[in-house]
Length: 99
Length: 118
Image 1 (cartoon, rainbow over the protein chains, first blue to last red):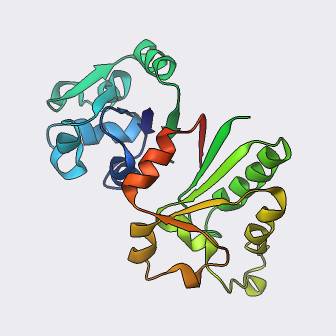
Image 2 (cartoon, one colour):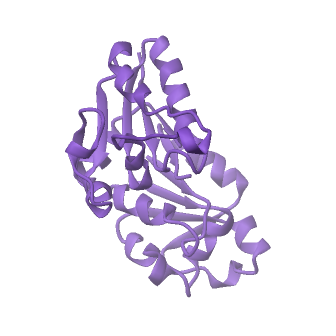
């Protein structure tokens, strides 16, 4: 299963709730303002660092680049481009966007 | 028949999400799909008894949850932690629900064909 979050972990509870229900082995894609949670500075407080031990975590590179965060990606998170986004959706039978 | 899960995480009147979710649930039910409704975070407020919207000029759609049974929608699940964090228990809710742990809810989610978030 693929989980998608697009809100900052400082602004909304979406990521928090997503991490509570995501099961080991699931994929998590962070897009838009959610990419801050995948940075070295944000991964601790957002829970991404801990979650990376049990989930496959991705961040959308165009959104990291747009925010000047591409060089600050946290360990355990993989940056992907739009084609990678499409591949993730195609690889997983179900996806859930945590609005 | 596909398994549809509707994930409700917003309070009822501050945004249109809760009402829109209910509309889509009813459409899916019309097509005889296997529907589950899940209430997490502020979504549990959608099911609170005694809603009265007269003074805010909005439609009180909470009685619709009681009508779902008539559409063969009987799978309503509430996240235990979200309910407790809001000082609510099953007696505060206007329909019978199954209260689930996060682990049980996660397993249920993973078993769906389609998940729609509101």
